[in-house]
Length: 376
Image 1 (cartoon, rainbow, N blue to C red):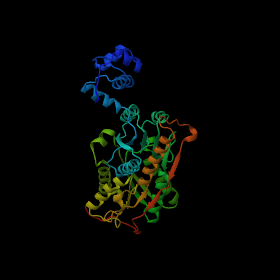
Image 2 (image 1 turned 45 degrees about the vertical axis):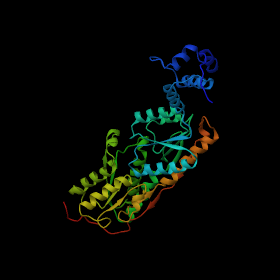
Image 3 (image 1 turned 180 degrees about the vertical axis):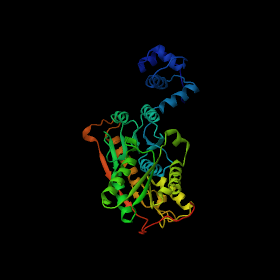
Image 4 (image 1 turned 90 degrees about the vertical axis):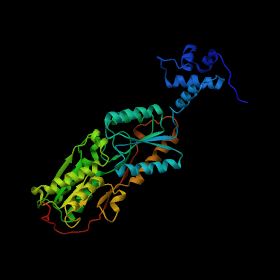
């Protein structure tokens, strides 16, 4: 029969290495004082081992502290999960993790640098097994420091200069493929519609896609006129947090602005900075009474599941979401197996794995388009 018996605080002191006064305050949950999780855990572990009678509230407290160091759990950082790019990668990582007995924490940052850093610090306190970033970090220097102690994998752009293990896609190559495809279809006047774009690390993929489209058209149209309109909707973290279908709305709004602008009447193709923006573009075009691809071609990036549905049939660029997710977890798992407690990274062990972009063409109409005189 199991039973508890009282033991002297001095015995717990000898076993835990924590002073009698501290042992007393911890066991009695003295208000107004605080101790590190490590110290509290030492005292409670010794008390439990030695048979100290622990009250119900102390048992609950002890249980919570046991979970302050969680095992076989990795965390997945993404801007949001409303974009199917991030949710697809999350699901593929979770599937791979489940097979190895790991649990998944999904953390959305909305590209908020302060929030990202705060979450990283929380994960460090929890001693998670590994960290996967599905976008380039807002605080890369801090994440590089984290990677000295924990396995960290980033899914990002090939041009990124960051001292971390990265699964890469060349967004510049993706942009070249898209530009060449539209040029071959006869398009010389196109619009690139996008959420916030810039040269910063976290926005590199959008900038690289646009830069590639502009450079490719400049090269291909040396002896003929062309025009690339860029429309941008600047998004801050708070706006992204409040709007679940933000990217679709951006595509819809910016496309309507183009369709209503008589100065842009010669546009024949639209490119969204990703598939979600492109779906908004398609809705705006169809609601105006135009047809796709008879009146306008629409293209995106990512090749998410919906893009292949027959009523949508979006021309897009394959970015291997499922493969990259599974590969990210495999890399995390390999590092965990190499060393169970800490993962020390140096220049020799930085890994870069590249996935080649591939155009998925679902628009084969090759005609000279002119704007129909409807709904204007």
